[in-house]
Image (cartoon, rainbow, N blue to C red; front, side):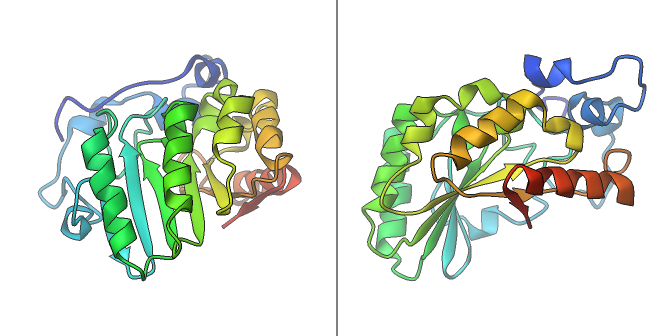
Length: 235
């Protein structure tokens, strides 16, 4: 693997790390290891094949009725296990490239759902995020918008009223939280979740099974129960 993999951890997540625990599950997700520089012969720079399904920059069209739109490839925190880790770290799409990506969606009437990912779409300013949500909402065949994000647990202070308002429109928006350990659901993170859900934005959660983080039944049960308790549906 290349040595130039991006590294970032927010002050909020850093505050959740127990420095006395050499196997802290929060640190294990975000603190880099020298093992990352070891590469096996079978490793791929694009392990899930995004490039072969990318007709224009910022679009991954793998399934007929849904499309991935990546308006920004930056994240407030970089997960060491990310399968796009060699692509993330760059900035946002230029206006011209974003227009081209939106035009692709307009031209393909089979697309019913647009998934905003990256990078982390909630790393965008509320103004830019609102413009993307509005542009997608103006496309008649787009029925739902899904926003995948770490922000509510990684940088909960970003979930301010302006950002919440940017997600609201005529087309339903779902926020999918990426959360792997119950300790990520701090009080600040729970407040960020409340700000979204109380304003009518439904939330789902996705969890990656990670060795030394959540690969035991007790931790997974605690995580799933905590998500449900905070009105987030795991899937």
